[in-house]
Image (tube, rainbow, N blue to C red):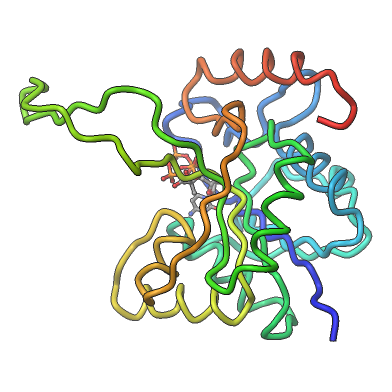
Length: 232
Ligand SMILES: Nc1ccn([C@@H]2O[C@H](COP(=O)(O)OP(=O)(O)OP(=O)(O)O)[C@@H](O)[C@H]2O)c(=O)n1
Ligand SMILES: C[C@](O)(CO)[C@H](O)COP(=O)(O)O
């Protein structure tokens, strides 16, 4: 039986670190809201997928015409990112074996090439997969006074990015287990690792920026302007 592809996009955050007058997913990036840009990139890679969009129940800014997908549904966000994703998993009518890819709305520079690479790994590796990039800098351990106490070995250290993809049944079990144990996880892979699985790290582009702080907006605009190849 073929495995359907579901795209879960957590977009219920408040963007506190951005400090703007609206959640950061509604800030303009090259004349479009970040949310619209991110959905357009996902659609470019997977026009036949079903989208599950997590939005805050009090969201006043969302406009449905920013969604390019034929099949999609809106679900309410939760207190933490993991709660928003769990709401999506509980609302969608997926089969156990279907593939679920979770992608932050705040990562609008994701490329179709990286999306396809992650889908390929998530579909073939039982423990699922995540986009990630090896740590490039020397890593320091700070004390409470922000003094560097020592240098951490960086061998084998990676930054976790999104998307992250898993079978529906594995992801649901992992996040339900984390919630049951009152553990807050900041990405899906953490929950899956806690069940004893080992998601595959797929080396992704370094320009898959998570727009988090005010100066990230200009950075994201510069990245989009530089991504000129139509196949990116
Ligand atoms: N309760 C939450 C919290 C976050 N997110 C989403 O999870 C992604 C990653 O979160 P982050 O970058 O931390 O976004 P915010 O929570 O909006 O930012 P901040 O932590 O600065 O408030 C974002 O796409 C955000 O919209 C969500 O859907 N539900
Ligand atoms: C999932 C994530 O984007 C991986 O880098 C990240 O953990 C979510 O952002 P947060 O700032 O930790 O909420």
